[in-house]
Amino acid sequence: MSEEPDTSAGPAEERPAAERPAEELPAAERPAGRPEERIDRLQRRLADFAAARGWEPYHTPKNLAVALSVEAAELVEIFQWLTPEQSAAVMEKPENAHRVADEVADVLAYLLQFCEVLGVDVLDALAAKIERNELRFPVPAPPVADGHSSE
Image 1: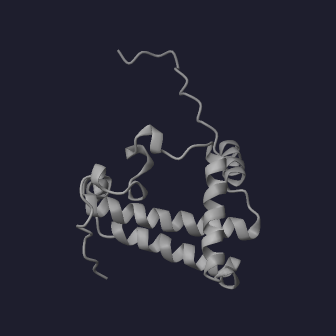
Image 2: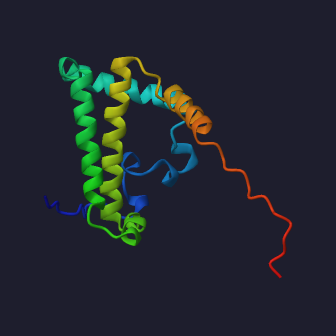
Image 3: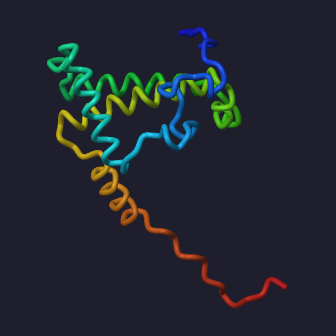
């Protein structure tokens, strides 16, 4: 599937704030609040967006999981045939950076909606998973010197 690159976006300072990553915005325009507050606000905006359009009946866990998978696949598609070097440089081209950011936003939007519907606190779930992984995969001990010299 071929998409035409979006050439309408000019330099970052010429794009509307809503189309620019937070780190490109002046400090006064960056979203305020702790991450969990921002996530809560985004989840509320997504829920309000869906409610205003009467989409709640379609936002079942199954449908949201499928939509999340489809959006993740669209993100993968961007990288599908790139070499490791090309994939590491993908954000250097504005048209690619825009596509990546859009797909990341789509994945996150569906993940947040999925968590909202099931009552999963996404930050608590992530913190718990990291803790389990730290126990499951401990940092290896440094090699012990055997006291022999290689000289």
